[in-house]
Image (cartoon, rainbow, N blue to C red; front, side, top):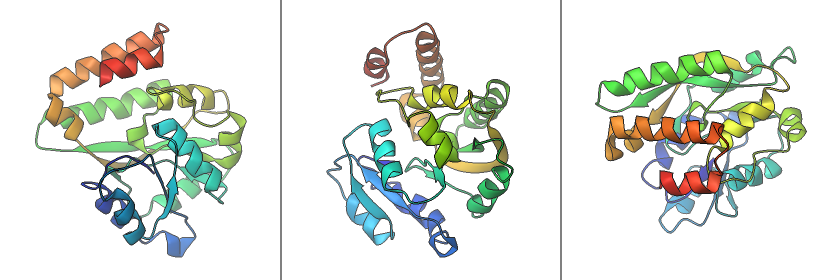
Amino acid sequence: MPTLNESATIQLALQALAPLPARGAQILVADGGSSDTTAQLARVGNAQLINAPRGRARQMNAGAQQASGDVLLFLHADTQLPINADKLITQALANGQPVWGRFDVQIAGSHWMLRVIAMFMNQRSRWTGIATGDQAMFMTRAAFDAVGGFPNQPLMEDIEMSARLLKLSRPACLRERVMTSGRRWETRGVWRTVLLMWRLRFAYWRGAAPERLAALYR
C-alpha cells in the first residue's frame, strides 16, 4: 500500500485487511514521507512500515522488494478489499494462467454519476485488459519480476504496468468489488474529473510524457 498523508483513509483500508495476516498474508505500507499520522496509524494497524522514495510507482516497487509472498497485491490507501480477497485471488491464479488480475470497483459517494463511472471503468477494463490502481491490481511474483515492476513514472504507472502484463496474459477480471473513495471526483467535480482523466489517457496514448501529464493532473 503506497501512502502519502493518508491519515483520513488508511484506518478503514487496514481494518478491511485485519483478518488476512492470520491466513498468511503480509501487509506492507510503503510511505513516501507523510507529514501527518499515516505512519503511526499504519503501525497501529499491524502493517509493516517501509520508508520509500516518494512516488507511487517507486513506493509500490519498494513494497514488493520487501514482500515475501509468491503473489503481490497493490492497494490504494483509500480502497477497501472484500473480506475474502485472498481466497478470490488464489482461485483466480490457481492454474498458472492468467498471471495477474484486478477486482471490479465501486466508488463511494453520494453523486449518482459515481455508479455510472464505476460501471464503465469495470467494463472498459474487461474489453481492453487495462486495469487501474483503483481496482487493486494483483499478480504473481514471477509476473512482476518478468516485466520489471512498475515503471518509474509519476502518472499512468498502472496503465503502463497493465500493458506490460498483457504480454504475459489477459487479466483475471474479478466481479467482486473493492470500495474506493469518491473524494477525487467529488472535490474536483465529477464531470470535470472524468473529462480530465480521458484527456490525460488520450494524451498518454498519443505519446505525451508522464511528467507533463502529472503536472496537468495536479
